[in-house]
Length: 423
Image (cartoon, rainbow, N blue to C red; front, side):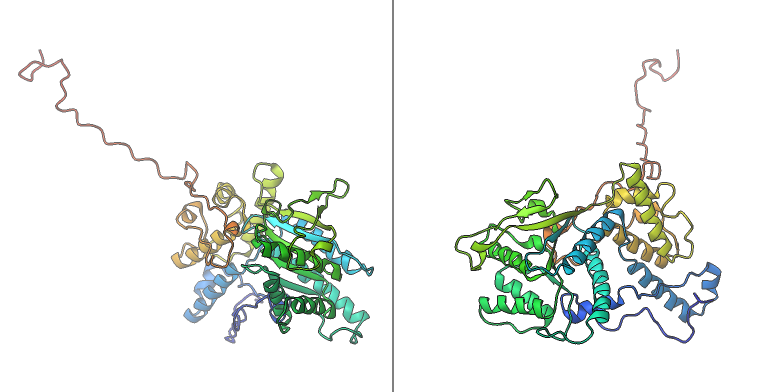
């Protein structure tokens, strides 16, 4: 009975106000505290659903839709690898009290693979632990720092990247004022990171930097300079090795880390560019599912089972997404890209509720296009190619209609007499 809808009229799944803006300190904290608090819709049988009043059925349908829209990106073997690297790097660097450069982390992968959500979830988990530890060991204010403790800062690289624009973006996260000069901006950024005791700085969409421009080269030099402030730098972007960000860098054969020298040491707007030392990054790839191996296929089916468990369709059945032709069909529709799979399941579930079918089948999903929504703020490299081939298996596709037989009434067969009678 605990899963039954509450007759008090309270709707716990509706969000009050706009979604949190993680590029602001208040929005990041709101998201961090509420990221696991969504209440999914209760599971009802068709009979239990029919017994509800029309008002309760309408609310339950909205709750089910909200549940399908908030499935989230479930952990995969690929995201687990990224999380492990990031958790280890953040913890080790935070516990290193010696002065000097902190090794950074680069998270690379294609579009809609969940790079941002994976990195943010790992950073939020680190912050949960670090705040708890800080509260136990250092509850009073620390001399020489600000009272506001900000272990993690999340920013997006400006579309038109310049050192001034990047500094303004970081200062906006803290809500700090913007000095007018570049040197003042850089000093304010360093003061904010140090005074708020920030341990991790996440820079998303880092591949917006185009290193054929001098401003972008100076911006990257500034980013590397921030590594001297006891801050773990986490760079997130699409196909980082081919973007030019590690141009001139090489992988250390003993550690596997990328060693990246300064990009530019000429007429740089960053006066410290000429004195930059080599920076070290771990490069971690977030890949799509692989359907060519037994392990990859098993991981994909296990992921589908996790999604299936979160669906609230009235006629759903065990194995709806994991048995028969469905796994192969879903893989061919999405190429194993978790973001595309999420969009397809969301749209299919909404259609199943509205049409009354209350289940997902290849035939139903074949009629639903994968729409990626608003792409205005995305870099073109972030948009994956959506498969356009016939999505249905051959034996489920409609048979090709036969061509109509040609009329042969007036054909001369050579075996009839002129009068039309047989000889």
